[in-house]
Length: 398
Ligand SMILES: Cc1ncc(COP(=O)(O)O)c(C=O)c1O
Image 1 (cartoon, rainbow, N blue to C red):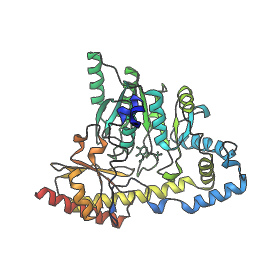
Image 2 (image 1 turned 180 degrees about the vertical axis):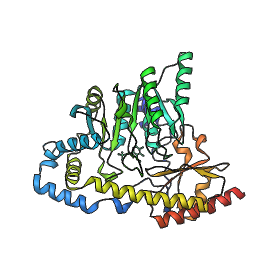
Image 3 (image 1 turned 90 degrees about the vertical axis):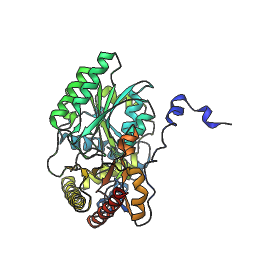
Image 4 (image 1 turned 135 degrees about the vertical axis):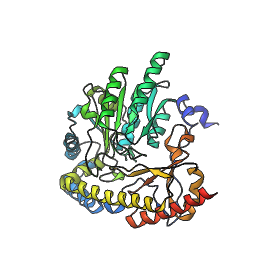
């Protein structure tokens, strides 16, 4: 029997892509992990989550352990509504869907909006998991380059005009991470945000705003596209992964009720009452404003450690964007294949993610790499950057 012969066409097509997670290098022991876009282990609130579980079960007994019935699950909706109200996003209950992280939100949106021939516009480079998700549904992409001010909206406009002149279909959806983008760390300017919304209206497409890093600003918070959206074109995706714990799997979509209804219709995991009720209890007991300030200060210190180490150890021809928040620094090394260089870097004891994995056309990313300052501590960051500098110098000598 040939199992694959039974797969749907959609799945057979998607299986031609690289397998999920193939970008993740296998790390040798003791390797300094500048590849890991994970929260710092010391910032994961283990004790507070332990308390939250104990107090939830004391208070509610078996309720959060059933399919439905925990009052705390209801509470989480209100807590998320309040949280995003702080970003000037005002949504009613039927405009919000809690998901298993931002990833499930993106997957559901793709499922509901994308047919085999649907055109999706993406940033280039973009978050590789999202790219993997979209590639499960379509192979029709428009990729729009990023510069230090985020998505190049002038290019987007040119591409849309060109498609209009040629009678080609417009995208149905633009996927963007306007704030502290993964992998570039860049933030879209307000002017460009307005232009995205104007283009969405003019060319009649939707915008998936992935705002996973919003809270992690070092200086000023930016205004989400969703807060400027007057036509309900933005499907706003958020997450508590980066500010509480990735393993809790709590994210959401805020969008017009029609979208939420459709997304909920196809969300067949029956929710995660225990995780959601635990998160609600954690949020009740935690002064989030204080926690967020601690996270911002810690990540800013780590980011500064990385930037100053890059300045100190990397050769002059290497360049990077300095982020205003988030987890990442995007590095350009002219003339170097970063995928080939990884073996050398790992053997020296430092990891990064080669740029190729963040592009639809992998060759476009060959001279780039993504560093993350979120996971390693400042001492490791310094040591890791020094090792990276040595590897780059050796490769450039060849
Ligand atoms: C841009 C972006 N969106 C979404 C996610 C995933 O978030 P979650 O853990 O909520 O699924 C990540 C995680 O790295 C990310 O970088």
